[in-house]
Image 1 (cartoon, rainbow, N blue to C red):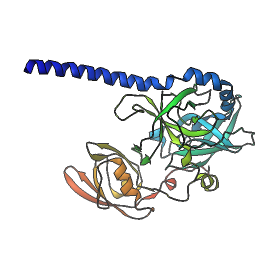
Image 2 (image 1 turned 90 degrees about the horizontal axis):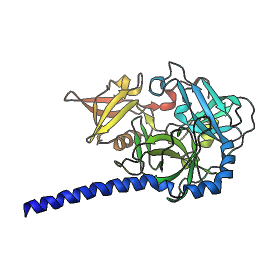
Image 3 (image 1 turned 120 degrees about the vertical axis):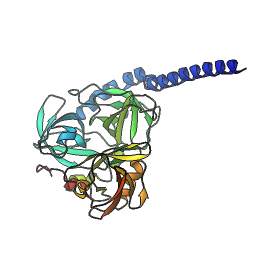
Image 4 (image 1 turned 180 degrees about the vertical axis):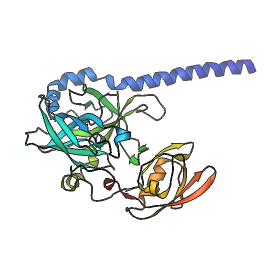
Amino acid sequence: MRPIFNAIMIILKKHLIKFKLIFVLFLILLPFFSIAKDISIDKDKLQLYFDSVVSIDSIIPENARTAKSLGTVRQGSGVIIDNQTILTIGYIVLEAKKITIGLRNGKKIPGRLYGYDHTSGFGIISPIISTELKSLKLGDSNKIGLDEPLYILPSPFKGSGSVAKMVSRRPFAGWWEYYLDKPIYTLPTNQSWAGSPLINSNGEILGIGSLFIADAASPGIMSPGNMFVPINLLKPILKDLKKYGRRKSNIKPYIGLSSNEYNGQVIVKRVSRDGPSYIAGIKANDIITSVNGNLVKNLKKFYEAVWATGNSGVSIKIVIQRNGKQINFDVKPIDRMDYFIKNNSY
């Protein structure tokens, strides 16, 4: 009986592998099922929507805090939300000393960084010279149907537009002290995602392109796609960004750590020079075990414990393991906006 049982198990395992492959293939091909119909219906409208999408090219000084991690030459797209405001993903323009905005007609105009919000990741820029801009409306990112056709619209000078579908709204924790509760994950991938608007058939902005994601459909399942920052996160802070260049409420304390989670541990990957953790003495490869007495085993719990302090300047007690020894640190967080180089942008 044993050989027969083993043979049955081998057959089942083979079929299970085939089923998983078929399921993953289905997830990847799902967004294509109605593409032909969607494009034929909205082709003329999409051409009009492209008039509100711009290219963005930024030059960042060598001494910028983000120069090493993000580079000194950055590019992507943005979308016009009013006659003086262009919305993009913030890392394209953060600490920029020079910003060039490219309109669809080929005209290029100088721009300036108007505001940045690290909590969401949004950045807004504006043209330095008076220019007539055609805007798109902000949509409702809480109302996106799984079968709804969505459109990723990079500037034509940066890449090609594509049709996509939303496949997930799960949390995302980034190593750069960044956490989103319900970002928008889409399939298939668009290689020119950075700063590109995600819009619906009515031309309403639902999100801004942030990242390439290898497992967009579900954690651990290979399904290359993109992650978009939901537009609803912009609405409560837009007035502050325009007036002050930053949010004025619910400011997350910043401690200057890049971390990864691995096997139930939060491991320091890099310490930002002259940041709070650098000054306190925390080093790369330290293992963070607790924050203010709260055990942390993943990035989400780590960020929640740090952000629970609520204010910059309030000392945070962080316990780490280094070479088998436990070390206690008092870290005084700051407002992240005070850490970056401003370049007279705001």
